Image (tube, one colour):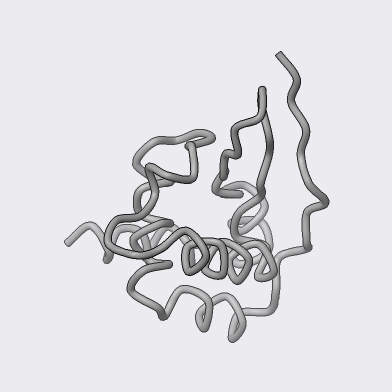
Length: 102
């Protein structure tokens, strides 16, 4: 089993993080990642959109420093960077995920 993690962006400033999370598709991806608590296969993070659109949303979240991508045995996974985001922006991710669950 081979695991490879892509370069991870630093957590962006608050306006950029909020902008990345303002899209309903990306918010749902983050909600699903938070519910899983660990790396999740990309295909389990979205419904009703194409793979290229999902890739765009993943890129936006990665560039904001909210998620990171890794590959394992040829399959791509996404991981929510809870600790890193909480350190940079205390309480923001927790509050947004809690609101998304309602």
